[in-house]
Length: 84
Image: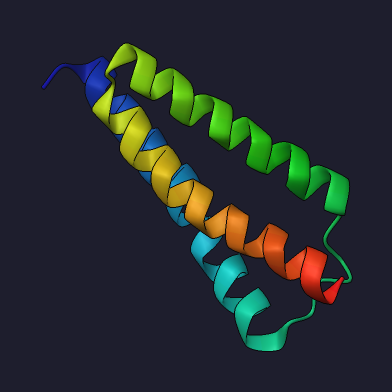
């Protein structure tokens, strides 16, 4: 594996996994008062666009990282909309 690929995989892993604690806390407490709807919505849309980009490029690390991220940030967004 090339150094650039290792760096990309490490970045994808960290930026994806960092959402797990927030998603779990949001699911557990249903407290979304401190989460900005506009920010979460924009971020979720950004993840969707990165995912589409990954599919268009056939880039497996982008596809995997953004698929997992979409589930996590999408869950938070749905919770924000539902429990606002």
